[in-house]
Amino acid sequence: MVIETHTTTPTNAARDADALVIGGGPAGAAFAIRAARAGLKVILFDKGAPGRDKICGDGLTPRAVKALNDLNIALDDSHSILGLRMIANKTRRQLNWPGIDPYPAQGAVWKRRNFDQRLLDEAAEAGAEIHRDVEALPILEGQTAVGVHASDRTYRAPIVILATGAPGAASRLLGADRDPNEVFGLAIRTYAESPRHAEQYLEACLTMRDSSGAPNLGYGWIFPAGDGTVNIGVGALSTMKGFKKLNLNSLQATYRSMVQQEWELGPDLERPRAWRLPMATTKRHGPGWLALGDAAGLVNPMTGEGIDYALESGILAADLVLADVAKAPERYDAQIAASFDGFLRTGRRFTFLVGHPLILNLGLRATVGTEAIAAITLQVMGNLVDTSTPGAGGRTMRIADRLFAAADPLLRATRANRNE
Image 1 (cartoon, one colour):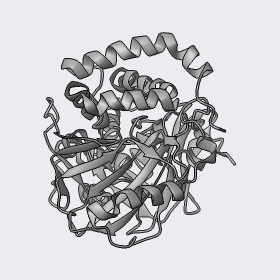
Image 2 (cartoon, rainbow, N blue to C red):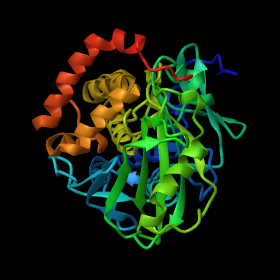
Image 3 (cartoon, rainbow, N blue to C red):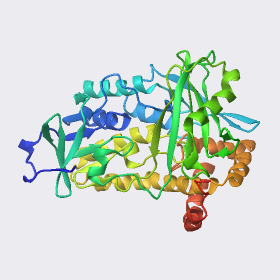
Image 4 (cartoon, helix red, strand yellow):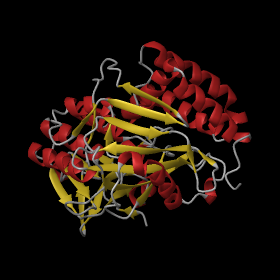
């Protein structure tokens, strides 16, 4: 149900805040930190209760570390990560983060229960007003967002920030739902004790197979958390052959059995939990509102990673609201498009191609078997590639964007049959 009012646009005196944020994950918290530190009155609503967990791989790329540095958030509660170990069939390749300017040669694992709480604490310390265990929905006057309704009352502000993660009730009211014509992902994870919990390399198995032995377009991961446990999970993309028949719990069990002995895994510490990853939305801004992070479809289509984009989009949105709140939504959309759209649409188109098992297998042999290609793959998996990236990674992305744009109709027409 759309919440509508019929009063005039509020004057400054009628405002409850300078900005209202729906969602207390990394995107919403980053906006609140940046804006509140600059003097704006920010009210943030999160429907999760204090101490809530967010299902996630918990990995922070060097891009995410840079964003946290920009927010002056210390990584003292996280576990430092030096790079990534990629596995394809019997081939292994371990690479350090490349340290491509402006990103450090450092990543981290930071469990989301602790990470999200730290960011919200920073936002509160900066002066933001935080409401937990409260669902907020946008208020529209015509097509313009003028506030939110939460806890049986109305809040008014000149800008509403949608930072809800995967599209839900709030995003649907604004017309920012998942694009049904684009790829999406599914993932599942749990935790287990391991004597290798303090290792400083993420591990990703790129040649996943389901219980019947059929190739799966996705990957399995083990992320050491440094606290006696590892995060273990698997993900899959909707462009793979047989996706609709995929059983995530079975895939998780298959991967766990593959790494059980090598990582000396203890029993699952909690029931494996799954979540959906949107990778494109129908809208990411409109009059009086803009969307951040996952709510804007800012997720790497090939890995499901989005924490870094969430942080960056929150920082960018805050800076634009501070500069000119009326023009912020359009300027935000234009800057997000210029920075990220090329890489994200290329990634989505690429998933249509590698959804075919034969093409996937051929590509993975080159990906891990060749050091030069593996180095580019590392940049892609670490979200270190965008329109400004120098060197081979940036050149490859720009060439691929042009090639896949021309091939897009064919890629969609010949996509793997998800029902088989």
